[in-house]
Image (cartoon, rainbow, N blue to C red; front, side, top):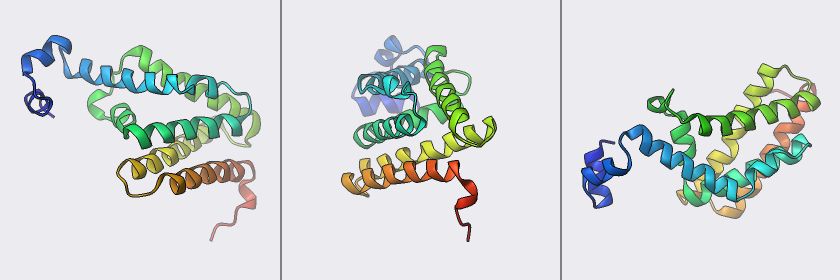
Length: 170
């Protein structure tokens, strides 16, 4: 979105936006920081440090679901936007990378998968609370149903990853 359009939508001037955010990267990083602080206040970092993969995954997923259901999918949009590639502040990228490293380590201890497979599983499982939260945010699904589906899918996914041969493939 051009800064002029953003200024109009915010009811302010382009100059005022540039006073606080000299580039769109700075604006987007400020939004990322706000989203990260919201998750931090909810206890996301503490949840990700739980030493049991199932508990850590469910706690993190449900906190992220609640965040997206309440605030929308902005964090995901900004973290995956091609425009931001290479421009995410190192401190914010480190938060994401540290979380992934912790989950990779926990997965390596309890899943019969390679690191590459665990990373792929993390990416796929992370889409569950993202989508469930997005559906609630846009009022396409009620909170209780979305929360139950989200938690059930996380638990089922981890169970299937532990015993991939036990899951029938039609």
